[in-house]
Image (cartoon, rainbow, N blue to C red; front, side):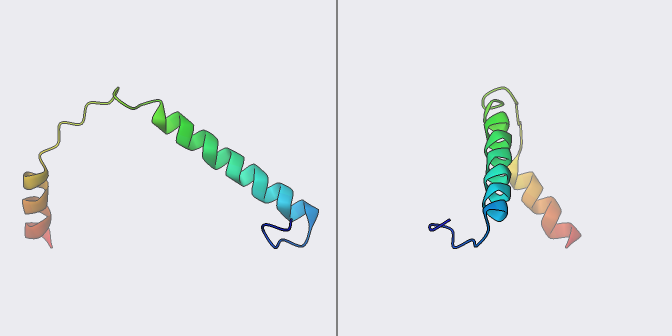
Length: 53
């Protein structure tokens, strides 16, 4: 509680659970590293966005 300046134990627990969930989501996303083939042509995307805007 000292490092977060949170006053109640309940809020500390809620924050800890939120951080745990966030950490697990990031870990799941990292498991896709190298498995998803993104064949993206950046130049064509930029031209398309410039024309539509």
